[in-house]
Amino acid sequence: MSFDRHLAEIARENPQWTIWRSDAGRWWATRHHPLSAAQRDAGCAMTIDADDPEALRDLLRDQERRAGEQHRWRAGPAPS
Image: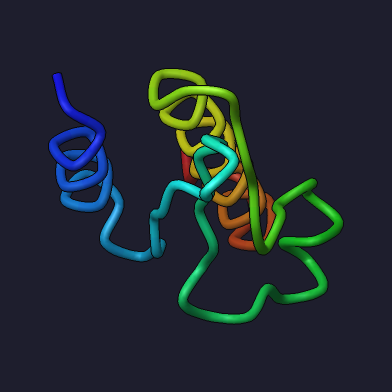
């Protein structure tokens, strides 16, 4: 698959991020909105990079997981 197609797919899967590939061949993503203090505390990053598209997808999933955990933590425990 061409890198243009990878870019388009990853961007479609992650609309809250800008995705690009550098001239050096690294894959990057940066958030559209600033992080809150709680998101930073949860390990969220404003910009991430990876060696290839699959590694970037993995990092993006991890970032979304961290953001979700931060959101659940702030919202408190689920009602029983």
